[in-house]
Image 1 (tube, one colour):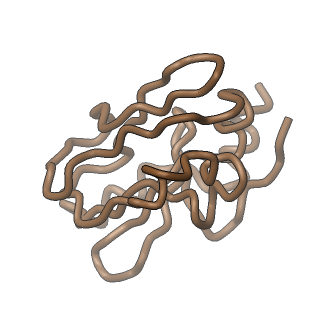
Image 2 (cartoon, rainbow, N blue to C red; image 1 turned 45 degrees about the vertical axis):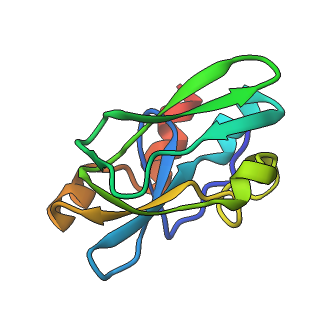
Amino acid sequence: MSTNTPEDLLYTKSHEWVRDNKDGTATIGITDHAQELLGDIVYVELPEDGAVFAAEDPCGVIESVKAASDFYCPLGGEVIAVNELLDDSPELVNSEPYGDGWIMTLKLDSTDDLDQLLDSHSYINEIAE
């Protein structure tokens, strides 16, 4: 099991990570643990720029050699950027899940929603169970 869970990020039980950009936006991807479970990622269906999601809405699909898995929006907001590098290099989600493998940036409906997410220690405990 992976323990690569940066302490400066927040996490969901469905294995997304959130970087609070401290300006009302958040960058989002899937965790190292999630990419490990999925295996070699071959395609990422990105959400549309400008799409609006509620927390926990499915907002994309990540396909690996093993399976296709929905990607959930951890917070409510509007998509203001997607990682177009993933169109040609979806394997970045495997090799750099917390770096160049990010998926999207949201303009948050409310920064208060960040309080509902897990810190790194809680997330590690969650995936250990």
